[in-house]
Amino acid sequence: MILGVYWYFKFPDHLYNFQFFKFFPGYGGHADNPAELAAKVQVENADDFIGKLEELKGRFKETYLHLNIDGNNLIINIGDYQLFDFHFQLAEEIEELLIRENAELIDSNIPFSIQSSKSYAPEREEFKNIEHRFIQMVGSDFRKSNAENYAARIDCNLPLQYKQSLIDDLSQICKEENLNVFYYNDFDFKDHCNLMLFFSNGRQNKEAVQKVDINSFGSKVRQLTQKYPLYFGHFGSLKEYPLQGPHAELIVDEEYILNKK
Image: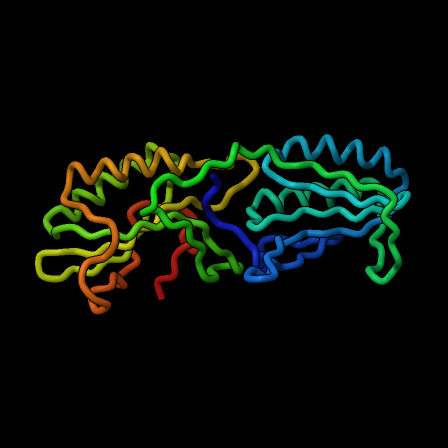
């Protein structure tokens, strides 16, 4: 599973600038469509260009790429429900290839008759259900450059005297499980504490895509219930809801993840 900074509803302003590709946002809800980067272009020799494109795609193993072909006219599409940095980096490198090949941008109003198509699936790990029901997978609202963040959330409560030791143990588990973002909200009352824990990563670049085994992580968190009087879910009423924070224990790319206003 890939966690971290992504884009779906809006374009990453001030981070990328494209000559050929256009961003089409996802809509979510009943529409349930992926966000897309699409370029409608004309090249001098489609077969030669596609060969070079396939070679380039081989260096971006986590991305989906689709081509619609009409002679030497192509529609190049990169789409997913979470567009990480490496999706946009693939688009950048395709743009460099298009420029070298003297490609021309085709007006969106010009008719396009699909003669053939090619799809290149990402090399994804086998899908696994999350075994631990106390883990929720959540997105965020918008941060810097319209970024969102995909994270694992755990709600729990325990006696206040164990709070800091639990946080320390969770930080160590993060380091073992390839997670470099850990922050939390809390609410302390009397001798007890409610916690809302978030675990994630930062921006995912082509040079270092981080993958997390969420079930391995969850198993280690569950083991902490043997060490502490730790219970999943929140204790008390809405007035004890953990809204104090966020408190960052491990953080990278903070401005794309946390809102401290």
